[in-house]
Length: 347
Length: 292
Image (cartoon, rainbow over all chains, first blue to last red; front, side, top):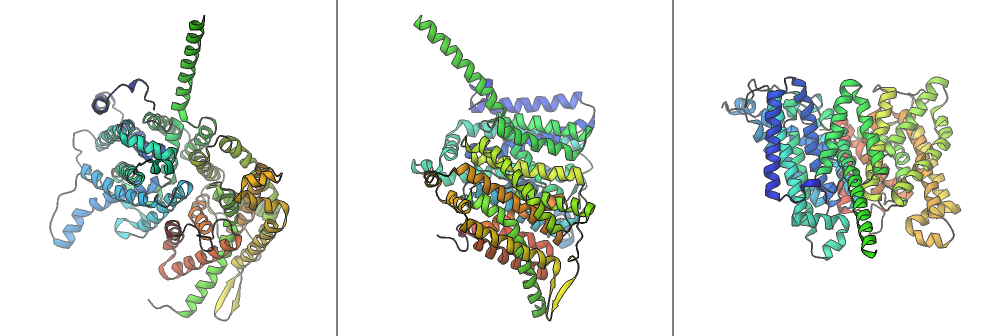
């Protein structure tokens, strides 16, 4: 598995390193960036790193394709809406004034809700492999969307307005607070992916991806591993979605269940490379930034077209993504060096 | 809630007609996914291409939409063959059908939808024909012609396809590909060529299915998505490879959806097909008429 210069870094050190990088980025951007728009745009790119990494834990490592990213993401967002309305609910039902629930708690709850749904899809994988699993996740997204559309408490099909708290914790604007939280989420999810890659778990996932029946026969607890993968992947997607209501301030089913989330979270790992944690990060930074630039300069429909075309192009020309291309070049160089060495030894 | 017999009968009749249309939409998937094992989730995009082709020709020349559908089938057939060529070259020969192939079709679906949005915008488009509007009345129930005409043409199309698949050499070769590729090769037929033709037919059905869609309801680019789950649900429920099984499943889903829409409101009906799909996939993956 890849990782470039990070190969020798141990798991614990990686967590520390990732946390340090995250902290450095937060501090650096806080003190140098004055343009609010930077935080708006960076939030989206970071959110995509989390989504792509989460997708890759299931899709890249175990080989189960999830087209329902939108559902997990939106479930996180809508569980925040429910929690956001909680003080008003207790007020009207019991006459008690409860304090507003802080966003980090919402993120944890959103992760738990989506993680539970992920666990459910994991059981689905008991019967469904390959294409059938992929289609079932697509179907799941529509079922969840129908439920939300018909649930008036969270706004139904009309959508709902969310008023941001007046004061942002940690100082700065509220958008900077959201941005900071998303950096923390990014650090956590990337570190989790890296940890899995280096552990027994990662080996088990790879065994499932390569040949599930053989893995099962070889004593790999496939069901348990798949449940871990789907739960973890779903939970991270839910966590990425939880701050969304406060980011957009108006949440409706059509935009929160948008197919663009699913396409992006598939396209980013495919473009970056699916076998290692760097792939989704590279893909998300690349595609996310392109889309942000295209949205500003051209149009938002056109930037989605770019993503779709890049997905098709990469899948045909470079099925192992950018990481695969780099690795192939390195392998070639190593092979050439070895050939030269062998020739010298013979001479 | 009072369930009146009148309402129920009308809902069932409307459901059967809807089912006939669903069968036309699904027949391509039964061929490409059921028989050829190609996870063609981009099918809805091609159905919408069919709808917009009908819209363009109908609005500029006033031709009958179903006639346009028939005229477009060869064009779609060729496009389908080209896509299969690409798919075969990029994925089947490399042995990477599964995840990369799926991502390919997913990308195709998305690119199709976004291109339609870029060209036509998100406004609803419709066609004009003498049978859109009037209904036949039979005592208790009505038969809207805009549903009846697609229903009849769809069943005729599927009947002809069934004849072709069971009687002609190529048709039987297509069925053979789905059962045993190696054996087919031993009979001196090239599986790739056969699959290419079959995939062409699968895409060609989208031309007609698309015109049915735009006859039944006004069309905008993103409604194709609603059909992904539905067509796969019907295909799986119908037992993957059998056209009669598929028609039965389509009518079943049409009726259940129509009853749900009548008694609980149309906003619930998308969940019906998907609920069916999840249940079928989880408990009876071999379908209604399938072998277990």
